[in-house]
Length: 137
Image (cartoon, rainbow, N blue to C red):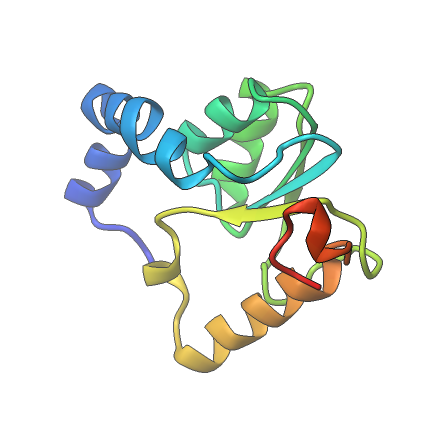
């Protein structure tokens, strides 16, 4: 789903970046280890990517919008940015130690497409024992 002008302006604003960086991401990621291979789905303008890239592991990002994907490559040369759909990921099973997405599900066009996105995220997430603090067992 395309963004309107107001949405684009908000997602690129300093206020949004500050709120995400100072409140939302620390809260949402407080118990998620970001070491190893981390996949971010739908990074958009890169507010969350910037924070995630500064917290550990090797980052890969999948962005459906070609222009945003190109901009992310320019902003984050150390991040492997792929243009693609999170519902059809080009990775082997169990490739990533963490898979994250923020503020993007409202852009996924249908509940069925969201289901495929979540199924793909689960497929590429490495399965480890519950005793290591992971939610996927």
